[in-house]
Structures are given as structure tokens and as C-alpha cells.
Amino acid sequence: MNRIYLDHASTTPMRPEVLEAMLPFLKGEYGNPSSIYGEGREARKALDRARDRIATILGASPREIIFTSGGSEADNLAIKGAAFALRDRGNHIITSAIEHHAVYNTCRYLEKHGFRITVLPVDSYGLVDPSAVAAALTPETILVSIMHANNEIGTIQPIAEISKILKERKILFHTDAVQTVGHIPVNVQELGVDLLSLSAHKFYGPKGVGALYVRRGVRLDPLIHGGAQEHNRRAGTENVAGIVGMAEALVLAASEMDKEIERQQELRDKLITGIMESIPHTRLNGHPKKRLPGNVNVCFEFIEGESLLLNLDMQGIAASSGSACTSGSLEPSHVLLALGLPHEIAHGSLRLTLGRGTSAADIDNVLEALPGIVDRLRQMSPLYDADAFCKTH
Amino acid sequence: MYSEKVMDHFTNPRNVGEIPDADGVGTEGNAVCGDIMKLWIKVEDGRIVDARFKTFGCGAAIATSSMITELVKGKTIEEALQISNTAVAEALDGLPPVKMHCSNLAADALRKAIDDYLAKQKGAEDNNG
Ligand SMILES: Cc1ncc(COP(=O)(O)O)c(C=O)c1O
Ligand code: FES
Image 1 (cartoon, each protein chain N blue to C red):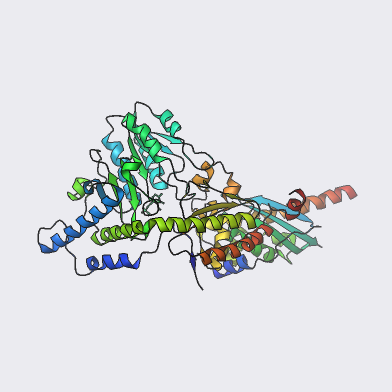
Image 2: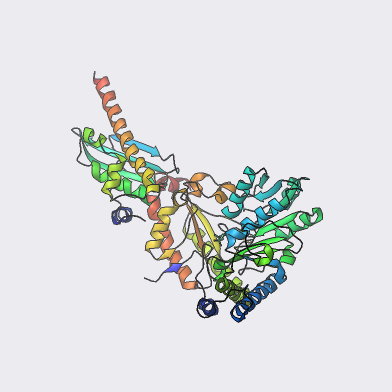
């Protein structure tokens, strides 16, 4: 069966060009970048080139890029690294209620180590209010971490506005840009951030490799102690093939970004409109406009997300949900709850995230399959009384 | 992650719906993840002759609901009371550990439907009484 993959926010398929770029370093070019002989120098050259390419696209200088094992490590390094380095200046950290667990749980961990965490609420679209950030600042505040765009609902935060406030007060600002790098323009100067996390597998690069942008002059305690790699900020022999692949993926993403944004936005809006028009008792989660080009997130009342995903999977469609039943922890998504959704509505959430391989025909197929699946599950739901709705609506 | 039998009962759930003139109805909410099952039974001469359900929940919840309606049909009230959640899970060739609580939903809803039936019986006897 022809599969339709609509879970690009979770991970993306690696591009063939990326694999091509990586292959030499998985085969013949095995040198350690720290070695001074020929093999090592070749690896060093590849690493330096990858660093240059990534820095250029982000508007950073190469020295400001630290390679990591992915988005989670970049978030951990930014937050723990800054918190422990600035401990002498204060112990207060501000974050938002809709952060990825890599940020959220890192902050929770720091709480156990004597840091005070303020978790800012979001509005019903998932937006953080910049004035709420300003109001939460205290003389003890050392770091603010607000994600660039949310991985579940796709809401894009006013990062540049927030950074203006923080710059005046000289407070470090970290943003988790794992969902935006390679998808929408991300320039560290324009955003005005001091720390920015990215992850290659979200933009058609390999899994297990990412980076943290660290503005020159920002102090960070390393997470991983050992050798002098990454200017003493991240020990360990570099993942040369992965890093080369990440750079290639980012350059390719940047070259087709404008076109892809326009194309995906059109498909996204067609999908959202199609769902809202064909399925009653549905709400859109996230902001209608300030939204990632490929993100669709809706709640269908009276049904549960996992049974929805199973049905979609049987029809060849891969998607995800914030339902408690899919979470493993049996708690619904903290992001959906932060929007103010009650548990039973959060239960019926569906996230469809488009990518560069998504076609108009894929969207048509989803729009054809979805209403029947939702209706079938509703007929099975004790919460749904079709007759009553016909009478009152 | 689910067994073939679970997927079969999920894809083609048996006995979905309501029994308008049911002899017992039980509704159970799942405390763990917040799901709901409603179960209707029809009883004749102390035997369950029909059972139907509606469930708001995951694949395991729907499959266990379907399976329990199959298991109770033809059983006496006493026999039906013996059906445990593990028996339902076993009849489905097992459930993933994180989904075992979903089988409680079905077993508890059945118990409530039977309690409802017994309470109604008692009420009728008292009235006749
Ligand atoms: C917003 C966000 N931050 C962090 C991560 C973690 O990235 P990684 O999987 O590379 O550790 C993800 C992806 O799962 C994400 O979506
Ligand atoms: S009903 Fe929620 S996990 Fe099964």
C-alpha cells in the first residue's frame, strides 16, 4: 500500500544527497579530526567546512557553533550549562508551559538543584506574551528559554520581541529552534538570541546529531567533560559523518525554503479547511497564521486519539496525537492542556505534519479517509449522541 | 504492539451499540487516562442473552469492550461475575503492559451493569413483596 507519512515534526526521511555527502566519512575517511596527520586533517577540514556552512545560514560565526548529539543535548547544554555557569549571579529561570520535554524536564531537574523556575502560561493559541516575560523578570533571573515554534501545535513565538526586552536587562535568552531550523528563516542576529538549539533529523538530516549556537562571550559549563573538542565545551570525538550530513541537509533546506514554505502552507490550509468543513465538532489547535508551514493540529470531540491513529495507519496514513492513551505516561499532552483544553477534548487530538514529500494527492486522500474514521469512532462513543446533536444544532 | 486478536476486535468490534430495554446498564470511567465505557446487558432466566457497548478510548479499550461482550453472552450472572480483567486480556492473546488498565474498564463496567441488574431485580421483588 502507498504510505502517506504525515509526521514530519517527529522525524523526517534523510535526503539521498545527504547520505551521499556522509558516505565518504562512513567508508574511507575514518580519521579523527583531532589527529595531526593526513587522515585527521581531512576529517578536520570536513568538520570545519560543515561548521562554516551551518554558521553562515544561521547568521553566526563558526566559533559560535557547538556540535551535539541532537536537539535534546543542545537544550540540556544550553540550560544546564548556562544555569551552572551563572549560579553566582542568580538562580531564577523563566520558561513557558509548552516547551518540549527536553527543556521542560531540564528545568524541573534544575529545580531540584536550587534553581527557581517560572513557567509562563500561553494564550489559547499557544502564544507567550512578551510583556509577561518582562513582568516575570527578577534581579535573580539568569536565563529565559522560550521555544521558537512548538512541535505539537506549530505556534511561532515572538522571539525577536522577547529578545529586545531581555537585551536591555542583559539576561541570557535561549530558544529551542528544533522545529524551525531548515523550515522557516532562522537568523540568530534577527532573533536576538544568545543560545539556539537545532537537530538535523528534523530537516532531512541524520538522527543523533544537532548543534547549539552560543553567542560569543556567553559562559557555559560543559555537560560532557573530557577532551578539548568544541573549544572545551563538549568533549568527545566528533560525529564527522553526521555533522557533514547535517550541514548538507541545512544548505539544501535553505536553498528551497521559500518555495517549500509557500507550497506547504497552501497544502496545510487546504487540509485545515477541508477538515473543518467536513467534520463537525472539530477545533483547530494553535494559531491560524503564526504557525509552522507544515503543521495541522485539530481536536475531534467525543473520540480518542490512539484509536484514530490506528485507523489512519490501517489506511496507510502515519500521524500522531496528544491523547493520554498514546503518551506512555497516560497524561494528555501538556501543550494542549496549557491551551486551556479540558482532558476529554485533548484526548481527541490529531497532529498531521507535512513535509517536502507531501503532495496535493496525499492531502486529498487524507480528506477522503478522515471523515469516515471519525464518524465510525463517534458512533462507538458513549459521549456522542448523534440524534441529540441533530436536534440542537 | 497489539496482538492480531486485539486488532481484529478493534477493527471489527462485536456488539457495538445500545440496548434500549436493557435489564442492566453500567458506565465506568477510566481513572488512569480518563476514558469511558458504557455496557448494556439483557438478562433472561438468570442468563445474559445480549450485551452491547459504547467506548471512548484507545485500541485496547475498544478491543476489551468488544471481547467482554462476547465472553458474557450466554453466561449466568454468577459466571459473568467471575470474568476478571486478566481473563479478558488473555482472551485477546494479551495486552501490552501499559494497556492492562484498559481491561479494567471493561471488567468494571460489566460489574456495574450486573449490579444495576441485581438492584433492579431486588427493587422489583421488594415491590412485589
Ligand atoms: C521542539 C523540540 N525540541 C527538542 C527535540 C529533541 O530533539 P532530538 O530528538 O534531536 O533530541 C524535539 C524533537 O523531538 C523537538 O521537537
Ligand atoms: S483507554 Fe486510555 S490507554 Fe487505553
